[in-house]
Amino acid sequence: MNVDEITRVCVVGAGTMGAQIAQQVALAGGYEVRLYSRSRERLDAAVASNAKLLGKRVEKGKLDAAECEAALARVTTHTDLAEAAADADLVIESVAEDRETKRHICQQLSEHARPDAIIASNSSTMASSFFADCISNDERLLNVHFFNPALVMQLVEVVRGPHTADDVVDACMEFVRRIGRTPVLVEKETYGFIANRILFIAMQEAFRLVEDGYVSMEDADLAVKNGLNWPMGPFELADLVGLDVTQDILSQGHLQTGEERWKPTEILTGRTARGELGRKSGKGFYDYAR
Ligand code: CAA
Image 1: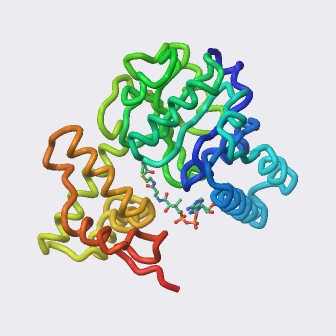
Image 2: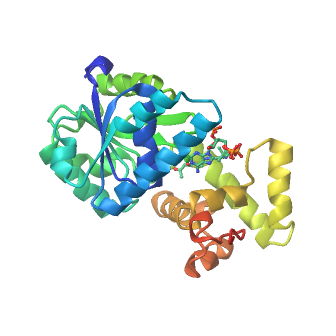
């Protein structure tokens, strides 16, 4: 597959990541995008959220109103996976970080997508090898990993699996450039790939410093923002990513590598057990109640 052969893209899953990935592909790449979710409500919420975010850009004079309308119209929504995936040249799966859910989706894509369509997983915690046996012709399977919020963050990691064909890797690297993003090539599968492996281990250090009484959460965030120039401190960032997602990434790291440094501790597990999941639930490390 050559990048020029990619004209239609299907994004599977309309959560925080899937919704914005679909919109970025349509906005910056000019591609027709089919966005799939089982849930019509989720699709409607994704469309409304994207319209609001792009609308703000129009208000700020950063985006032309006609371009905004056209980019929104290029994303169509579907509750039938066969219909959404049938004519796609590239499918990006971004469903829940649950192994069985992703394997089930891969099996369905193997059935409904064209046999030469590239299948890219946006998983943060599962390398594409986890799904290789679910896909006919696994040479077209790899990870293409976006960051949150996908309409803003520049980086996309393209991860070569032992099964992935070279032309598929090359096509995805170029595709990422065409959607206005900066790709990095991860040559071998490793837990957390590159950015998350660095980020989440650094977050663990911050969590431990606070748990062990060396610093308050607020001062740890101030230290990292002012001393390291991160745009957000680790606690603010965990609230943005979601404490449940953060805990999941750490737990999987612990499980998959066997390394203690990944093991989530009380400061996180206590909050997730109480349903304090970050911005999306109104409370996490910080309070977002209005
Ligand atoms: N969704 C979409 N766009 C958003 C957004 C969101 N949740 N939050 C902010 N934005 C947009 C704003 O609309 C604004 O866009 P324009 O400039 O085009 O108008 C732009 O981002 C800047 O926003 P603000 O001025 O309101 O705020 P800011 O300058 O503080 O930026 C931020 C907000 C972009 C989130 C910034 O704080 C940041 O970069 N934080 C770090 C994010 C990060 O590290 N992400 C990686 C997380 S790890 C991950 O994603 C991997 C994984 O596998 C879990």
